[in-house]
Image (cartoon, rainbow, N blue to C red; front, side, top):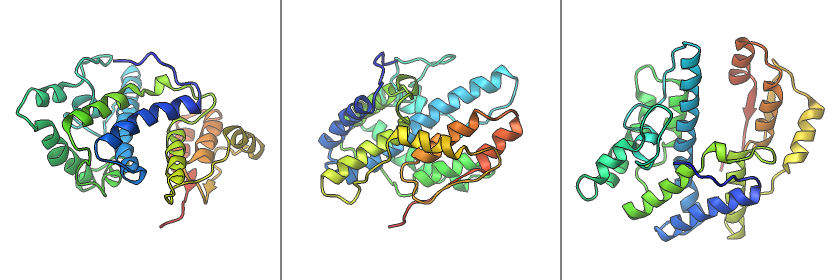
Length: 262
């Protein structure tokens, strides 16, 4: 299932995210400090699945091996995607359909009793990969979803599934950081401690072009926030890569960010 609506501005993306937050609020996650963490792990799994689908296709095209971070039934496409959507080479939503056709409460039991514990404990898996460690870290503070009913949870998952990276025009924004900047600003409006101010995208682009970081240099942001400077620096340097070795340096020994610990 694809959403034909193209999100071309920060305002349109923020509006779409707000529509998801509205469902979160009606489901018992009333405040931003409650629904932002919940939305975070769902968005994370959606983006991870879409990214690894692309990486698998690229690896197949060149005859390379690809090892996914998650296997069936723990991939987003298995348990969260609506059953009527399709991937390039397979159906999606197979596990979700099975659970919905099973006993009452089976879907919520899977999410809380199987999915989240599995993802949280990935770091203990033999041969764990760096990406799997990140997945485990994302879920380290979660024991179960706070969404109150299966109906509300499915509505949220459907909305998030439609938020494909293909639907977001990256000309004027960095999609992921833009989502959280909008959410954090809303938290600030509610007199929470999450409100922050963010450097405009065009200012970031100008600063990165002036600094002009090169392959092999270190990019460090001591107050990285949602990662706007790091994301733009990555795009800037990536255009200069000429080999697999350059890409490896870019991915493993270039970017470092830190935010204050509270």
